[in-house]
Length: 259
Image 1: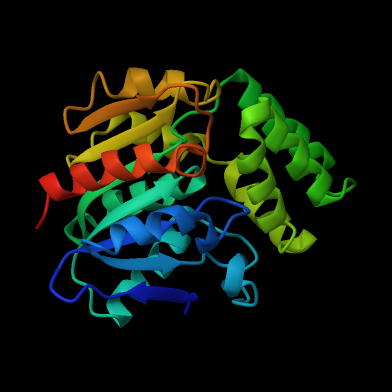
Image 2 (image 1 turned 60 degrees about the vertical axis):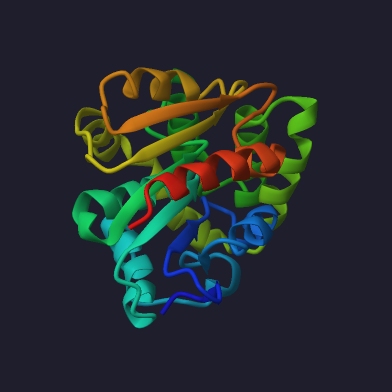
């Protein structure tokens, strides 16, 4: 089972589950835990190969988002959590959207921070470049390069540093598995863009998230269950760059859709 940690509220029966992105870990939610645990039960999960799930391994050679989503749900089943609000960041938004698609009965609402719903031309070029170089270039060098492209500005430094430091805990083999998963993500993202999951969804995006914000702005125009909040002067990793704004918006949203 994936490594996880929980914070129980003395009276609330509401659960909020946090899912990090590729190369991260549950440590990236440090600014959210304190705020959310005041009102909700909180569950933090480290995805396979990340954080304290680093040594969680099976004979699986190829990852799928369906498999990753089921591993998160295994934790909920183990803790007897019937339904929860899910909060994801970056690639973690694909994981929780997959949960909503395949297991909607487990989801009360979705908060999608720095959501990845389409790779623009730059993103597609990066993926192709990574596929060509992943076997010959050290993974951390590739990760640093991607981090600078996605979070290029000076005030994005804290987000870049956090994710690079967490990525150092991955091994080359694990990085290749996750990179292969992300590089083949276009079909599932196309489905997510077409299909409104019908569950309350809040997208929180940075105004400077040049790679992903445009596609989200278009998506919410067609998905009635979705809404968008854009944080000014903020990049991709919104929960790290603007934690107070992220927390306020997320908590208000979750409170409006309690089970």
